[in-house]
Amino acid sequence: MEAQASHIRTNGHKPAKISRRSFLQLALFGSIAAFAGQTLAALFQFLKPPKVQGFGGMVYAGRVEDVPIDNVQRVMAGRFYLVHNQAGILAVYQKCTHLGCAVPYNELEGQFHCPCHGSLFNIVGEVTGGPAPRPLDIFPVTIENGEIWVDTGSPIVRSSYEDTQVTKV
Image (tube, rainbow, N blue to C red; front, side, top):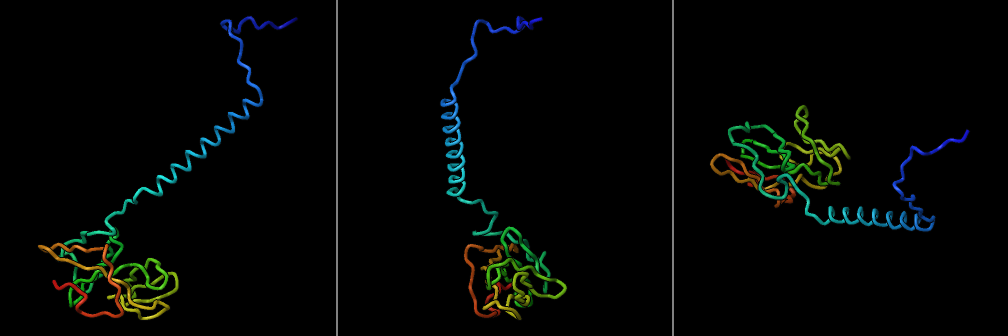
């Protein structure tokens, strides 16, 4: 018994035949187009200015009355710590001066402790141990109507701590 394919309708059209050479050419050009598209997309992402969340400009850090004396508060958007001591308010950059690692504040030790190579910094960013060559950098602080603003676009490189570096409250 022969099987009949009478139930398949072709509407009078024959299936298109494509040669092996044409198929390989289409596959090659398709691959080149996909690669070029991905390369252009990556280039566009590279050339597009990065979106930063406050860092590199003026960052609002809160109100003076919300920062108790002898306290350290991290300001994530600005990548700094706000230190309020007896002399005033200081914005300490969280970047280690040894190799640039992010330096967290250790509340139990009362100091900044770099996890990369063990540098230690006191509450105002002075080196107390480790390979760091100088204190943590600071940012200029402005207080207007009780609001604390920090200019993260102008880091201040320093060789030691002085009370003149803090902003009086």
